[in-house]
Amino acid sequence: MGVLKKFEQRLEGLVNGTFAKVFKSEVQPVEIAGALQRECDNNATIWNRDRTVVPNDFIVELSAPDFERLSPYSGQLGDELAGMVRDYAKQQRYTFMGPIKVHLEKADDLDTGLYRVRSRTLASSSNQQGGGPAGPAAPAAPQAGRPGGYGYPPAAAPAGAPPMPAAPPPGGRPGGYGYPQPAGGQRPPAAPASGGRTRYWIEINGTRHQISRPTLVLGRSTDADVRIDDPGVSRRHCEIRTGTPSTIQDLGSTNGIVVDGQHTTRATLRDGSRIVVGSTTVIYRQAEG
Image (cartoon, rainbow, N blue to C red):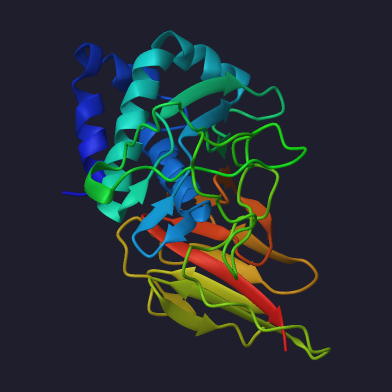
């Protein structure tokens, strides 16, 4: 059974079903859980061959209506989300530098049903490790001028710890809030700029689909340009339009689209944008060449 499914089942029994009533808004706990998983994937830093460190301190920003609805349960929900992150890290063999914490915060600039996730890596004095048998947590090196804010490594390392690399591994990018999100820890590198035309493609479950026309329709129908065999995907679910900038448009689908963690009907795409349709993640890519 998958980590997200187990998380959903645990929530069903909490507070005599209260959570089922609370989560009538567009923001669903499993969506937040999925966003936390992606935050770990996007910010994973390779320490050595057997150790990959991911953030352990998360903030989930919610719209004012959603926050007011969920705040009475924020402690319990935060604990459940932290447990889900721990289970996912164990599955992926990730490690942490300290205890896992998930906090809910109100963001006045978000509409109902929208959310943002921020993360950072915080070291504890005992270097607690939440990733199961993956080994002891990796220490971090001091970062000059950085206070350990979200998206940055912690400001100080435990005494006697070996230095952490000053930058992400080749091909990696910072992924905290305010940074572009990479498509994943092992995505193929984009082609270097060569002054030629821009190439566009998408990646679904490791398979690359070139975009050779100005528009690309994704859906479950055999008439779609790229067919996605997913019961949560509509026959003509959404359309990608390439250009400057490229965009994605929902085509009246049943379940909508989520782009980089936000529910939307239309969004601008950038290299590495993550599009969720049904239970399928689509990575948008573009490169000069």
